[in-house]
Length: 271
Image 1 (cartoon, one colour):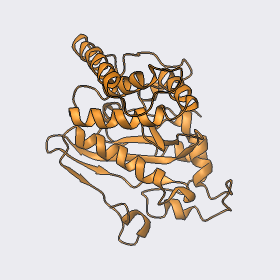
Image 2 (image 1 turned 90 degrees about the vertical axis):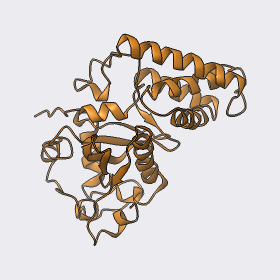
Image 3 (image 1 turned 45 degrees about the horizontal axis):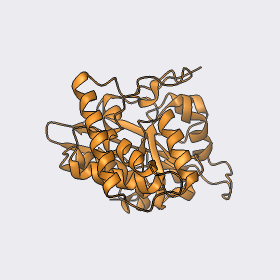
Image 4 (image 1 turned 180 degrees about the horizontal axis):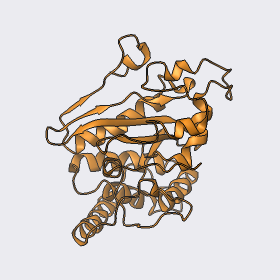
């Protein structure tokens, strides 16, 4: 049985804006692709892209890649414009610089991130990981594999309660049970879930999400990440949380809480 993940409006809000309106025909759940920009938003996107491109030409964030004089301005501009028009200018500059440094580190990373942008322009990019809308179609099999307790590369078998012991559900007996759970089926529209993907390997590391969104009071909750054991307390897990927190504050959120069990020592370290 195939389960289709519901992508909530909050999910698409937190991902990048894009002029692209189509995704792969194989992606039946749309993978968090935001709705097409209206004429006003499209014009703002194009204006922001041009503004950022010129700014980076005048003051690039690093050395020019040999033979690729436009790589840095293009990277900076697509990240700056992708933040959308509803976040602060300071945030757009900061996110664009981070993306520029990551994408233009080498010729290889430039090729990698240009290709990724063409395929998934909406993804939120960090130095170590990227966030994409959680999708049963794309992520179910791997997420079950890395959290089921079975042996992993460089990690022996383990008790799956290490992952699920303090979470609302799990461990799951099979993939279908996980697909029908809260992990892939949000109970309300005021929550959002993201897959955490390693930038270098492209491997799924786990998920991170937010819930209890209260835009009236600019309040939201960061949920405990669901990650494979070797990712716990890693820079990848920390950055996944940071990417969400940074964008939420850029949208004007004032209160971000995190609820955790008093005995969950690992998750409490993130608080």
